[in-house]
Image 1 (cartoon, helix red, strand yellow):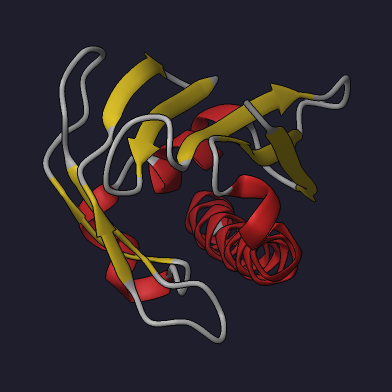
Image 2 (image 1 turned 180 degrees about the vertical axis):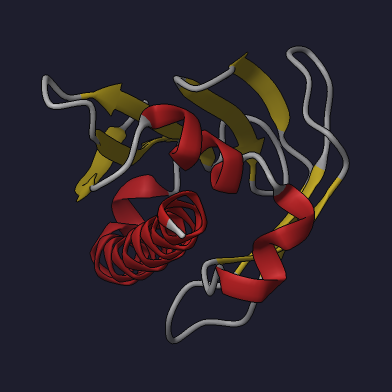
Amino acid sequence: MAMRQIRTEIEIESAPEKVWEVLADFAGYPEWNPFITCFEGEPEEGHRFRVRVHLPGSKPMTFTPLCLVMQKNREFRWLGHLFVKGLFDGEHIFQIEEKEDGTSRFVHREKFRGLLVPLLWKRLERNTRKGFGTMNRKLKERVEQKSSVMKSHEDG
């Protein structure tokens, strides 16, 4: 079975806990997240939730993935399928790494497996990478904006 991966990352000038606050505020996604436009449910390991993904240049798609990992301040991972398992499966991964200076690196990646992956790869890779990049930048903006507001309140 074919396997491919898309990996992106961005540096965020804030602590991992602050990044997690925004990332795990699923109800707030419509306010800032152009890639995941709707998130329903509170994901717990071993349970399903509903997510709407909007790839640039495509119509939004709704999935009901299975939460694989929910590790506060570190990692959120899920597995979704297009139609049936094995045809086109995506393991979506968000990881927050703490850097030596106390700031964060946000790693956003997805592993794709299935019979349709080779056929869809070129378009998928381009659009998905673009969607990941846009979400990463918006996450960075939101976290850093919230952090600077909190800092100004503390200073004032």
